[in-house]
Image (cartoon, rainbow, N blue to C red; front, side, top):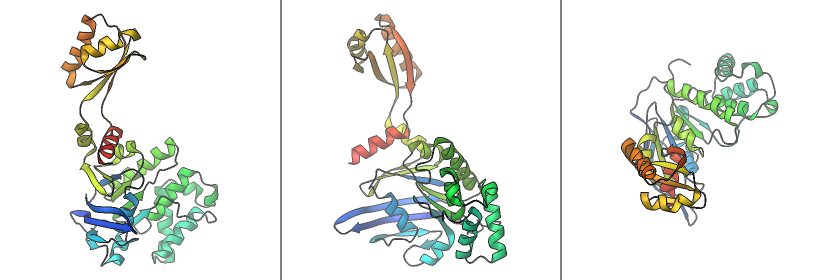
Length: 313
């Protein structure tokens, strides 16, 4: 698989003003996104936001109503054949055949990409080893675990050694161990120079893997930045305090101007740095309010997602 990233271009994927309607329902209202070569962009959004429609347009499975998009430097509407030569796609649904073995599946995909018999066998063997499936190569896929099937799906999408890979919710339904294994393989692909566009329902996945995150809602982009920058936009860290006496909740809340849950004896305070945290605890101590437990919670992509999608709803 040498030389698979020999053609350089600054942006592997570029979309401007993509629109798409199905009947009277407008699904995309002007999507803009850019994925630099060799990076991973995570596309997030609630169900029905337009994520899969965007991926289908970029992979030439669906024509846009308006706007432009290039993948690998090729226009998705005018040069779909060239686009398909440089991409791989792992969709939400498994594409492998349960009745075939892992090796047979990969050799079949190699044949579909017009690789000769000897080259197809060599490519299949390399991928089986790369995705830790060599020992199960001659077993029917029907006997594979969920994690093994998704690894085989990913291997199948790499048969043509694509420069650009689209992963549409690749870890949905996997247990935590299988998800972590697939994350490791995605990181290896990224390190090898593959450009990846990932859609996911798991915000931790985007946080772990993505160079940039694009959040779409209602068919339009509502955020586009690095995970760290998006989390900073949400605001301050949150100090969660469990009080020694539940009845001190209202008084503590009044002292700090914080939202307090008097019944549970806890309150949450937005804090700006170590000095503010220390001041908060000093105020409670001077007032004789005992604290049993202190937890400092930094903003997560979950916070970003909920804030952005709620604001744009």
